[in-house]
Image (cartoon, rainbow, N blue to C red):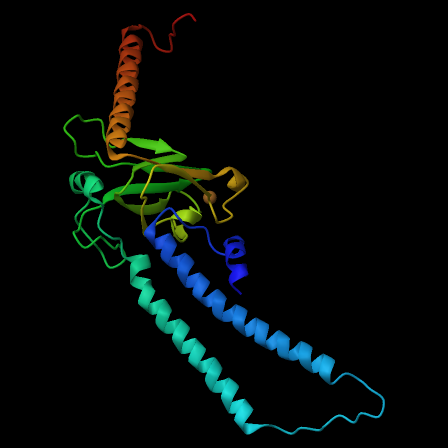
Amino acid sequence: MAFLVPHLAFFTPQSGGSPNAEEINSLYKITLYFALVIFVVVEGALGYALWRFRKRKGAVAAQIRGNTRLELGWTIGAALILVILAGLTFAKLSSIQDPSNSGPEGDRLAAQEGTLYATAAKHLPPNGSSLNINVIGRQFIWQFVYPGQNEPDGLGAPYSYEELVVPTETTVTLDVVSADVVHSWWIPALGGKVQAVPGYHSYTWFKIPRPGIWRGQCANLCGRGHARMIATVKAVPPAQFDAWLAYQKKLIAEANADAQASRAKLAQQVGAGQVENP
Ligand SMILES: [Cu+2]
């Protein structure tokens, strides 16, 4: 069986981006190993019986009516396997659902930018601080709104489309909503799917240990542009994230200034409906 292990990656969930994805992957593998052993035993017994008791001249098939010991055996055995798998699943469930604390570098960002409230549905790390990002699904693009709503610069929260930039080592909690129809947020290597349902909030989290890019895509058929509704998560070191966020704010400030200049120009024009010559 050991030679099978390297090939199992093909059949098991993507992982490697976040601790919750690791836990989902290991839980999947445990169930897969049980299933593989049962598959080999059952198919082996079937194959053996087919070969050993194949049709031969003069052979008369034995007529067997029940075998209490065997039947009790496989009923209790199957029930036992179910109990073991259910027990393991519940034991691992909390590490999938509940975020862990940020690493030492990431903690500063989480504490400074994060939310400090929890609801029954929203799970926070034990120390209560995470970098909370709002994920808005809309036909047909993902929008990400970062913390910064209440900063004195008056610019509002910075945002991006399609690419979610996050700091490494930081526990990132996602608040997933939809602006129109049901979408599904899924970056396989970063954990399970969550649906974005209009009128509801869904929550998930991840903590990415090292810089890298993780890809995913809307996992719920949401209209004719569904196939183009891709998402990328780009993890960068915390200092680089700070710089990126500052740059987004600068771009927003510049766009605001441009808009203000255009409005001032329009206001100077006289007469209703009069426009500048191109
Ligand atoms: Cu969608």
